[in-house]
Length: 88
Image (cartoon, rainbow, N blue to C red; front, side):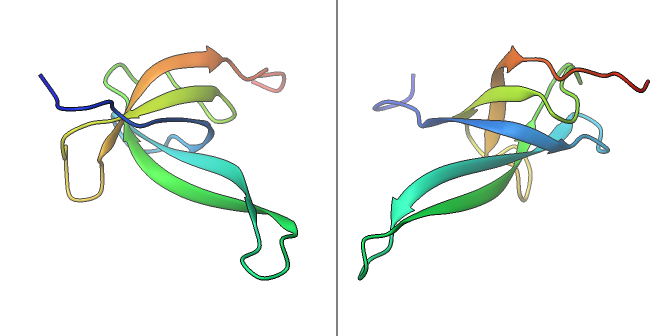
């Protein structure tokens, strides 16, 4: 059992070309250290998707996990909202 509470974040899938891996972009608002103007910061994470159910544009909840590979330290907990695939 892990110690403490696992970190979780909500983001959008921006890439799904790899097998069992998606790239998720997480945006957050942060104030500028000096001028206190709110700025939008974004980070991208490689996230483990065991069932390959996520597609580009999906809104997902990701949680921390033990290292799965060299760059993957997060996994998809659930798909919050599927993207509308009009042109497929």
